Image (cartoon, rainbow, N blue to C red; front, side, top):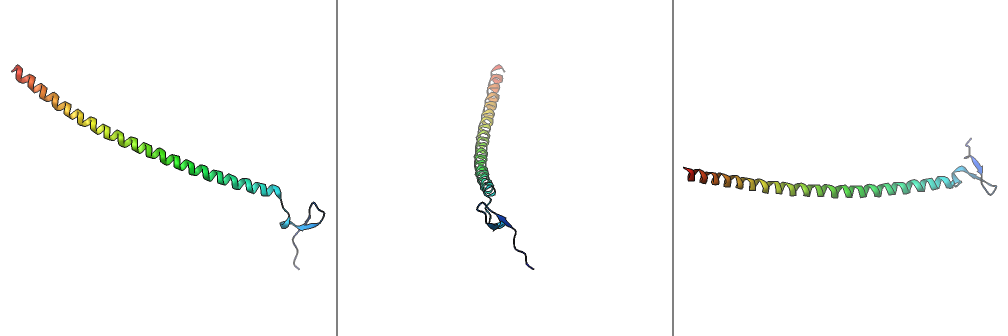
Length: 95
């Protein structure tokens, strides 16, 4: 014997199978969960974009600092050579 699905009385005093009854609170929960998922997905996408921009800014700053450090090292070498040259001039003059 095959049993039929359980029946439930609705607001209009007639019976419908459970699977045909509309549970509005459940539907609202599903809608709310779907909205929350969409908001979370959008927030994650915004976070990834901001993170990528931050990383690009850090890379640019790092490259700029590296270039400046190299320029300062070159300047330091030039000044050291100039100091040696000036010292040799002083030594020659005193001798």
